[in-house]
Image 1 (cartoon, rainbow, N blue to C red):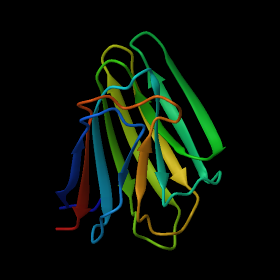
Image 2 (cartoon, helix red, strand yellow):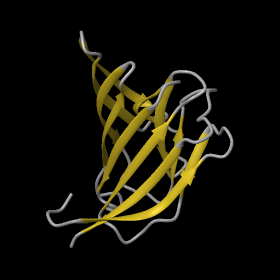
Image 3 (cartoon, helix red, strand yellow):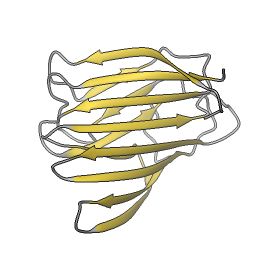
Length: 161
């Protein structure tokens, strides 16, 4: 993120019914994107991103997890979605930075943090191994679970000041 940058709200979705995927596809003119998710899931689940409807195994991530008494790490490579955190049946907050999303010459890097007071805190770095500019983004649960009523998704654009 560039020094002196500003956050501009692009879109906010508050779920009125349970959904398994929330999509964003109308953003341009920014250097980076920032996604804030606050809510719950029907069962403890992954929180995933998929860019430009790419279902090939072009995603990887590394995560660090702490639960107040222990810590661990893991790595996923060659996945068909980017795992960027967890959403639980108790309130989860997921803060995600999608860097340099419109650059058409580099792979895309994502930094994310999940906070859930009842279970854990996670820090994740993800990579989409594709040089295409990101033009759409699907937020999912990585399975059959659903985001619950009241879960809020807010996408911000970050522009250099």
